[in-house]
Length: 159
Image (cartoon, rainbow, N blue to C red):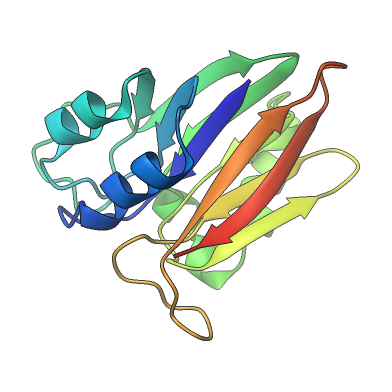
């Protein structure tokens, strides 16, 4: 199974479509918020199931604030992260997710990519495809692949 994880596209979707064309197909696309009204374009372009949550810039959105789902054997929390104050660090979101029984948390908001695999929780922030803020400022996304043994592997990728 292949999962594309993106966030913070802020209605600038050209890089999202480039990633799909360059690296697809996927079984699932996860968008961690700040879509800004591009829900239809994000969904239609994916060619697979899409899960999206609202971010702090998704004003008047009907998207959920969080999604709790199962991907393979993993219980996953999808959220934007701003309500967990992730700009100050991701300890709170990791602790909360682990306490709630999740194996993985996908989040965005910081525009900085992160994959942290710890004993109790895996935290993945794909960064931003539109407005990256990490050193080098390359647009980023993450790919989750579940191997034939059911184990998840994560890759941070840059355009």
